[in-house]
Image (cartoon, rainbow, N blue to C red):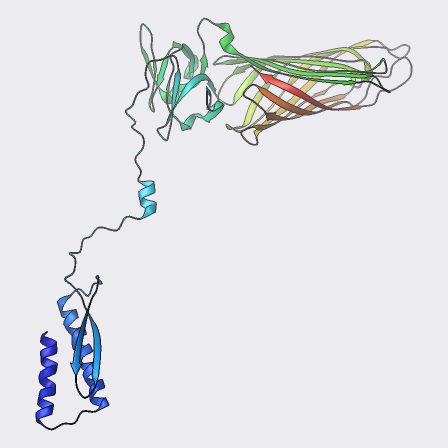
Length: 430
């Protein structure tokens, strides 16, 4: 209002003095009004901050009507030193679940992830910094031990700690401690824990396995029957692992047998550290009449090492000395039908969980022996497993067997060195 009064007084003085109105004068009046208005507004806000605006209209009437608009700024909001919170900051500052909550005492095992979330189900074991856990919704899962914040079991668990110290009982594992319940409660530092295995009075708690079967029947112009099977059985304790593996293939076409080979491997591993173990002993049995092998047995010792040991990727290698004895279906005149010799065994196993439901396993075993029993032998199985349900899988395997120098039989025919088989089977885990 003061600005308007000042401008109006200015024009009244010009009118008394006889000054004429002109477009230039009108323009100057508009500019003057705008300039004074802006200065007045800035004076009301020394800080010069931006605030919500209020639009005010002033009308000055001369020989022509000019309407001018200018903006006045209200009183500023008191400034603070706080920085506005962004959406990203809100997302990252979300609180963790209540870490003081404790699962009820029931018939379930419980694990807490490092995010604070709890899962209930059945504890399967922890070895080599990997915990296996089964729940009704998620089925069987593997977790890195570093991702587990707490573990609580209602069942008896066998523990292996540093310096070969052992304990047994229901456990409560916190971020820093391992508490073993019992008549005399025991408390250990978490970083001393080496492995955990479901234990107690039931021997079956130590065992797990898988079985895959394939069968092909063909009739009509050609009568053909083909059977193949693979099986794996394992007993695992905190410090040891005992495994049995079988793979067999029988094929008959037109009443004539075209394949009949069987292989059994057994291995007992004694863990010396998280990655290094002894093989005491290793045993293998193999027969393949079409390779002129009636029977072949191998006994050996060795050492193994885990090169990669992650929840979804594993790779180990092994090697050691052995003794091998082979019996042949037939032999050339003057040559023995059996032969025993020393051998060097070596092998590798690679496991990769490509997705949650697809797994690839590549296993290889080799033996270097004398020329009389085949020189170098190779056995490799590459298996792609597709999980269909919690228990059943579809397995596709490519099997390669090679004897570098097959033994020539009494008929003078030398067997071919290589055998390849593509096997499809339905597998079940237990």
